[in-house]
Image 1 (cartoon, rainbow, N blue to C red):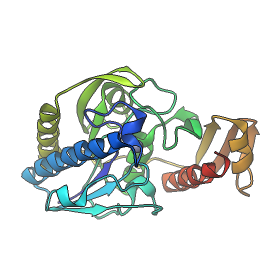
Image 2 (image 1 turned 180 degrees about the vertical axis):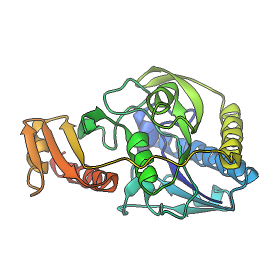
Image 3 (image 1 turned 120 degrees about the horizontal axis):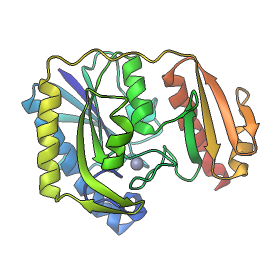
Image 4 (image 1 turned 120 degrees about the vertical axis):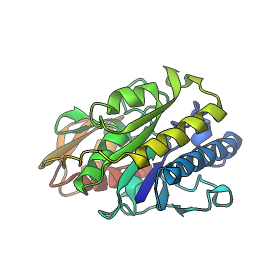
Length: 272
Ligand SMILES: [Zn+2]
């Protein structure tokens, strides 16, 4: 059984402040250890449940957060960026399960460090009119490949947002939202035990229904945080400028949605 883990940092137990996700900040040096150990706990549980291959993709910021020398020896690791399909780089139809660890609620929602891909650029990302966060978009991409979502971990609002979309996934809630930058944390030890147990359940479940592939076409709309970003994005020929603060793209697949989202996120750095 081949299992894929997309590992973010905002939804890790002990992480509540933007500085904990910023490379070069002393708080980040501590947070990346928390992230690595949570991933290891999940890898351990997945293996106990029957996983024979685990691929972990570092999916936060510069995507060089996970510490290779501390990683579970059984897992392979994708580090760095840019990379195709970004938070799902390397996922292919041969995987049996897609997991998202340390994820967070969407831009415009109230969860801990809530954003969608790029908090500087995107006020909201909508697919066919529905606001979506990273777990929704990448989980639908997995469904497009025929792979079910096995597990999502993060705060309570991440679960509330994504359980309706992925009712057969395990949800590991490691903190309760108080605000954007505050949460009641589960102890690190209990969070790791929870992830290990949820991973074991996710991998050992035999009766999980096949995912329903999302049906296109898709229109993705990016509501931006300032008009200059829409000006920047509007240089792309396929773009549709809906108003001063919104651009849209017509996509045949969720893979294309991810492509535009990743490209716009990178372009946003030109107008910082
Ligand atoms: Zn992140």
